[in-house]
Image 1 (tube, rainbow, N blue to C red):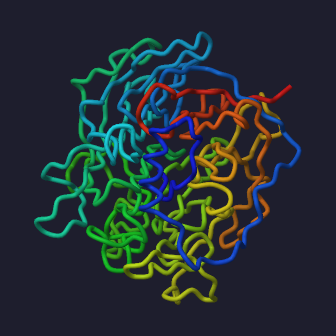
Image 2: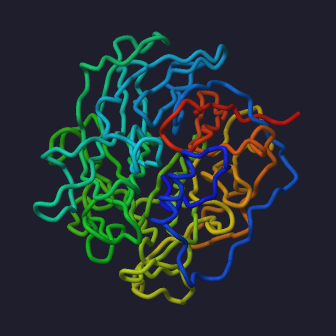
Length: 469
């Protein structure tokens, strides 16, 4: 998810301190970066929120979703390879699917260290109640036969991102589990490095599957497996994009999925048929507003800017020519940095789309964690607002939870005062890392956390976001 997780960690977490030290060395803040140009997310006096414990004992829960036709359950994706079926009344958890044996070995610096790979995405087909189909996004060891690759000849990728379809035998049974024999591989993509894996699978209101992909890793969209000018600006490869596919179709090159005829690059050699939008660095979490159909993406920044985008068909969101609304210089062998210019170098003639909201990475957090537009009924002040967070703040030693006020979805209209932060009983003093969000069938939201921020241990937990009465 993050690319610059360089925060100081509570002293009690010795194992995590070692991991964060390693990441800090890899992704230090750029020297000579621009001055602070962003208003700090403000505590706006309301609504005061609380976290209600729902489930614990997990490792690293990163995504939560509901299954069509199954009420009272939240299906939680644990990065180590287990999909948990959580009963929201009893808090009982059971394994719905276990793909841990398919994953690369986690812990980029060894056991107990940070990693961005794993079981990252889960989506239920809109017709799950009748067809029982489930989709996963996993980080798997590299094998021959990737459908997309930017790797030079005779150069191996770090791993491969794999989209697979599974099926349950009785989708009407809330206690059903996935039959592992039903696995069908849909798409396999070479990933040059361990990081910037994105990882969201979500069905849109059009019934098609949207897939978020990072730029391939390292930093500044440079290095082995990154094309000249950056993967983000080359929609002929799928890294740094959001894809739109029909998992039940067959007109793709590999015959395992379909390509909607109105995708923006169909028939255009300037981009891959599967690409819906591009110019992203690491859109780790994307989601649709269930009321309006608006697609939101939280794109993790490099050294200076975290951003929230509203995604449209064919849109170019600027990376690596821009970081948020700022210009970006990859700076060769040195660390890249954001800066101000008008126009940004290399953008002449391009129709780039700025974020609808952004904040300063150095001051406010480490990596934006996308959430959902709240459409539940239990927190009226949040209704219609996009709720999201940040992995961990170096200033106050905890993850953060934000929301946008009256999101403005006009293109190239960045409102730096739009982000708000509520006081949250249960998060303020805990030192928890924000790993992800969940949304149940009623539109209520859940915060997914751990006390370590790494895919090891048993501190992963699910909390319902509620009003603090």
